[in-house]
Length: 135
Image (cartoon, rainbow, N blue to C red; front, side):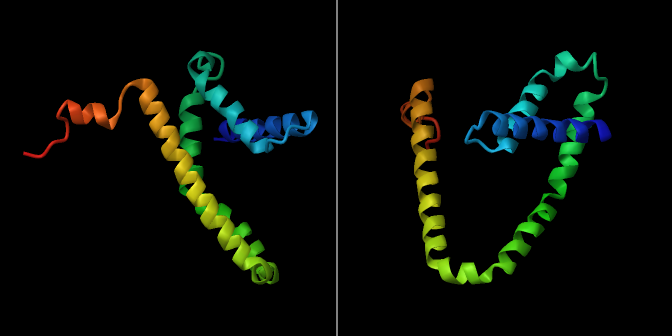
């Protein structure tokens, strides 16, 4: 578990160093997740050099996900400490949340439709084949 936590935190550190060192407008943890994804992709090749890498990363990841809600407590405390800002800009924050949710849904649908057309699998093809018809 110590090795896998070290790998996870090292990936986040690498992401922060790259983001700040190169001045990229990407959050360091996002780049760290990409580094971790790369390590997970190369996991089978690295298995010989680091025994138990796959098992320990899996179990540590599941443990972190099981307690993910605890990581939101500091953010919630920060919101409660700044209720004055929430009261002053509440309507704008609600509008931003509603609009961003709607835009996210639209972009997701457009992306899904585009990918389904490119891959040749669409609902129209399923309808033409008679898949999903009720008797």
